Length: 404
Ligand code: HEM
Image (cartoon, rainbow, N blue to C red):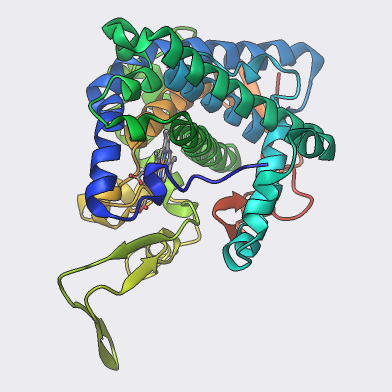
């Protein structure tokens, strides 16, 4: 069962405390440090591509969204703890774990309004939780593992070695100048939980949404493949961020994926010292200072005045149109902007470039390997409810593919 993250940065309301907590984590996600992570991303990407390759002869159906969760989870756990979750080695990509995460996020609204429910669930013995479903068992074991890792780093004092601090976020947090109370195992556990949740699902969902659209639009895929052939002469070599991070059509595709299916999470803010003025055609509104306000990227990113034909996936809208960039708020803006944005972009560039340099649509012009959607329709990428996570419609198996 996904537990609370109340002491993690995302739930820290006072501005100064948030800034102090975020600072030692922030440097791990700078553009230059994420570029240095390319080899870790490539190592895991190679495992992912090998699984695709192995499924060619067996015609196995690949649950792509779960496979991307396994990939992104293996990357963020390596970076957070120096110990990879290794979900890519599991036959089912540990999909049941994510089904358990989703079913527990469905309880979120109840927990918010019924004060005693959250603490009651947190207090349930681990064995009870584990017996409820294989996914919850797996999640509970993962959480135990983080405790062991946090305690191990604390007791061995391995965080005092700068080489470890360069490699993993938890070492860096323990070696930071945060006061000892901020380094308590229970708080670090919550940051670990946040990194695991935030660092996995969003990127996996965006990637599978983009792949759904590309496999449904042959002319877009052709255009992307032309760009990739020029940038990556060898189809089997793994790309670097420097090689593909500037490609215009690939960039437009990623922007469009983020636009069309942003996270449902509401971005909450308080302007403590100023009134906010908001104009609608028939009225001017004033929001008094200190009033909590929220909004969601989906409303802005699907506004037809800014993005005509908003429900259609159209990467071309971004080309030669930098005016639009400011309306892309899938990662939010300001001091609470997504901490992992550079990592998410790097993963998306490397994954999409390597997958589509290798694979084409069945019937496409490339005579190499082929990829096709399997029993996946627009419904499988629809968002039907806001439970903080992007919940698929009931019964959906999300995006699935076969390769040949
Ligand atoms: C496409 C992928 C992703 C999207 C669309 C996304 C989006 C967001 C959004 C909208 C927020 C809330 C910002 C706010 O409160 O206004 C957020 C926060 C956050 N994200 Fe991401 N995210 C993605 C990937 C990642 C990755 C890969 C990580 C890596 C660990 C990550 C870590 C975080 C963290 C730690 C926060 C809390 C930041 C804070 O409160 O200071 N995210 N993200």
